[in-house]
Length: 134
Image (cartoon, rainbow, N blue to C red; front, side, top):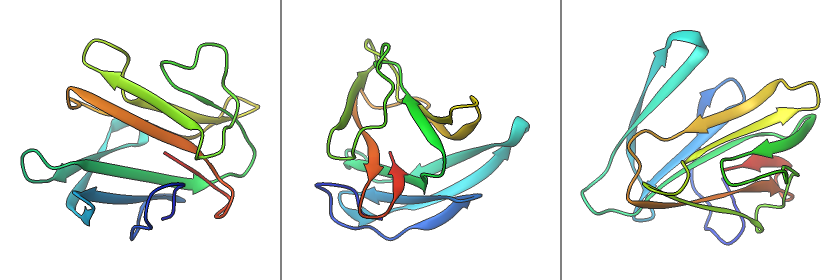
């Protein structure tokens, strides 16, 4: 998976057309998945303490109309992947997002449970791959 400003990373199919790349300090990291009620999927990552953790998700762009996240306000346009940034911490926002169609149908959504003290969410349209990445 290629995202602007980040080196390519190997991907694994996750759910439907969504793929995932999980890295700890820039190296592929172990993860497991577990189905949850309502069609949800839990992703558990194993990484050494203190490792810089990256979870990259990607899905085909299809008929995407917007991307919501806790800091977006009324601006929900699809940004290029080099421009989409959001910072979250225990006291400011949450690591969560939802890519949706004009009908309101969800194409991809995510949320982090027990995030680190501070996290940066990089998101947007990968013009190179014609996919939405987060």
